[in-house]
View 1 (cartoon, rainbow, N blue to C red):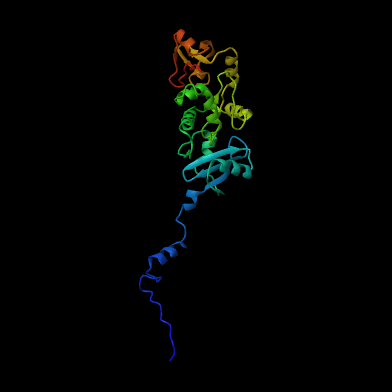
View 2 (cartoon, rainbow, N blue to C red):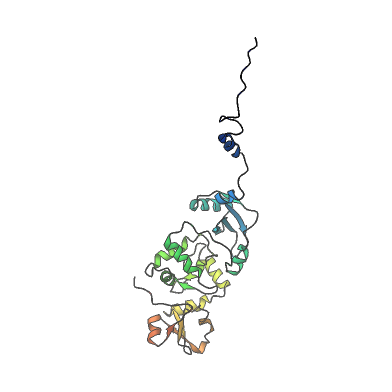
Length: 266
C-alpha cells in the first residue's frame, strides 16, 4: 500500500489565506502611504536670494534651515548637527520661498521652528516684526521677548536663528551705531541693510554723538532713526536725543510704531 502524506488544512487558524498573521505580513510588502517619506526626511534645495549660494532645508511643516556660502556636504553636516532627520535633494523649492526671499515678506510660507527653546522662539518672534528697511537694537528685542535684561542672550539666540533672511535677524543692530554680529558676517549684514535702504551712515553719525533717537518738533514724537515715521521728518524739524528719558524730559512721547524704550539697567 502506498503511503500518502496528509494535505495541510489551510482553512483553520494556521497559515492559510484567512490567517491574520499572514495577512499582516503580506501588508508589509505594500507601498508606503503617500507622503510618509516627507514626514521622516527633510529636503534640500538651492535657491536664488540676496546672498550667494543659498541652500534651504524644509520638512512637511515648513522651512527648517537656511544657510549661505556652504557646499552641499557642509550644509548637510550643519543640518544634521541640529536636526535628527535624513536630508534628501528636492526637485524644486516650496511655493512662496523665492518671493519671500526677494521681498522679505513670508506671506503664506510656513516655517518649521520646532526644537527652539521658549526664549529663542520669543526672540525670533520679536525679530520677525521688524519691518523691512528698519532696524532695532538688541535691547528692544530683549524687551519685546519679555526679558529686558537679557541683551547678551538675545544676541546668542539670534546667532542660532535657523532661518535667517526669512526671520530678519540682520535688522537687529547695536545701539552704538555698529551693525553688530551676524551669522553670515558683518559685511553681509551691512549689504542686506543697505539694500533695504537703511541709512546706516546717519545711524552711525547719531551714535557717534551719543544720540540714539530722533524726534519731530512738530509732532512731539520720538523714534528710532530708521523708523518709517522718523524717515519722514524733514531736516529742520529733526531733534536728536540721547535716550527716551531725555526725550520725555523735553516733552516728547515715544512712537507707537517703533516703540522706543529706556534701556533696563544691567
